[in-house]
Image (cartoon, rainbow, N blue to C red):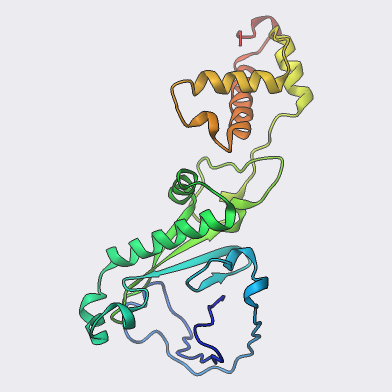
Length: 247
């Protein structure tokens, strides 16, 4: 967990340990228990913060596989409400919590991964899972589970087709055609330009009516995926070379 140091000389207090708890902590008893724990605390100075928390105005949870951003009906109800006790009536709102979580997640993704807002919204709607953090007290919460595999760099993209929202199946990679295979298939169809140029031309034809597609940061990747889809489709239809469909 990454936390901001709110005041000079701040200390750390931990507690409210649970032996088990589901998302939402629906009732007041989530197997409350005492625990003996070991904690390691690292102080990151303001001038040497990791990029993932440079502009973070809220706590961030990181696991081996995920980042988790938390939103609440009131991010700081002690300051936001004239009477903090009103949180028990004002904070029981998942729409406020979802809005807070959405805004925090969007801004964090844009800052950390250098995305534009359109790319971020597309990413969030396809690859981020939102859950109910808790409704047991007055300030209801929503959290965003952001899988790290989404940002892994490599020569092959992930296969998004027919996979569940959780589990190892989601991270299967779709194998891209090798360059020599692309050249061979194109030559068989009488295409003399390079695969790179053909992919670029194909992308331009498909996106000719889209004003923003031509400036997309993912243009090259999408162009190559379009070319591979076309070549793989041709391969599946063909049983004899003389019957190859024309590209």
